Structure formats: structure tokens, C-alpha cells
Image (cartoon, rainbow, N blue to C red):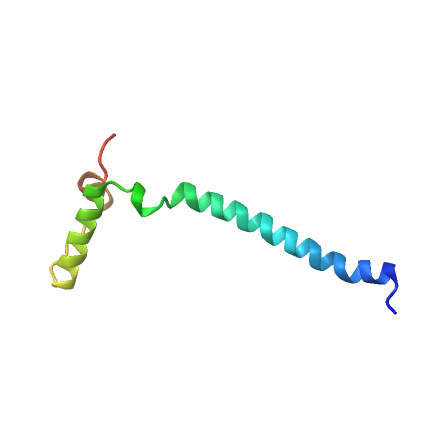
Length: 78
């Protein structure tokens, strides 16, 4: 039979690892919600423009933008 102290020594690291994983996972989930909002939060106009751009790329008609051009074209001033 396994003694209580021995059992605690074997299980404690496993429990600690599981708790650590759950904490880290919840932090990552919270951060993802902040930085990657669900699609329904995107402006409909933005989604439409992305779909149009995907269609142009599939047709072989794509554009290149530098950072400032991209900002001007796709990021609305609020």
C-alpha cells in the first residue's frame, strides 16, 4: 500500500502543472479576446472589402501596399 506522504509527493507536481496550465490558458484566452475579436465585431464594410480582396487574389489581380498606403486604404479613422 502507498503511504500518504509518498502519494502527496507523486501527485503534487501533477496537480501544480494542471493548475499552472489552466491559469496560463485563461490568460491566453483573455488576451486573444482583446486582440482577436470575434468576426461579428468586425465592421461589415471591412469584411466585404477583405472578401473582395480575396476574390481579386484568386483571379490573379492583387495589389501591393506599403504600410502608409495600407493604413489609408483599410483602416478607417475613428
